[in-house]
Length: 315
Ligand code: DGY
Image (cartoon, rainbow, N blue to C red; front, side, top):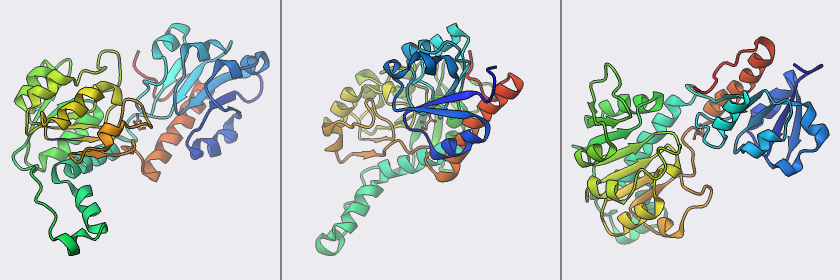
């Protein structure tokens, strides 16, 4: 550990509670972006930790001679080159558990919005169309009688499944291996699950092995009554294939909180009425984001005081 208070680099924007708390324990250092070109030799030598809400490349890590830990704001850490961090012996932490219930709640809201077209109904009312044109058209879809397949059954997947039980829908899931003690229907392949259900909820992390796994074939298997909900990562869905499937009625609707190229959302997707769109707000309540911010700072404090991080990502 360096002499004095550890210097923690914050590249780009991060939740304000992280900024408020860091000076209580560390000397925070700010740069406008995680760009190696911004790192001078003096800066490089003094930094032993990074707190980040965004991307950290291998090249950026390599710009620091004594980097010990990267504390990622978010449970998903696909923005950080975790393999490179592992090779260099840099500890990477994320923020699991504190956002599980919030993301599960948002998922149910997005699912209901999508099948019952509630945002469209509100837009109808606000545009004065109820008084002018009469009742909002009946929604062609319902949650009643649906068979919902969870693609991913980690902590958040499980919390979504528990909520779904109370809606009386059938629950299936696909992960690499079946989870012991779960009564839901397990499918060893995504394609099998897509053929057996009419609704898929994506809650897998964004990795090379999940990239664009929701493709034209899976959407075709889901079928004309099909609904796709994505609250995991945009990279899991082939967005061009999804847009095409929605335009041609290959599936009935989609609800998306995450996108391939955030914060940009394709014009073709934006133009569709059978899709419900959210700006990546799964965990975005003040209380939950405070919990995530605290875990970022607490991980750094734990590492520099005990040599053990609270929530290192799995190797
Ligand atoms: C996460 O924590 O990974 C969520 O996407 C919220 O940003």
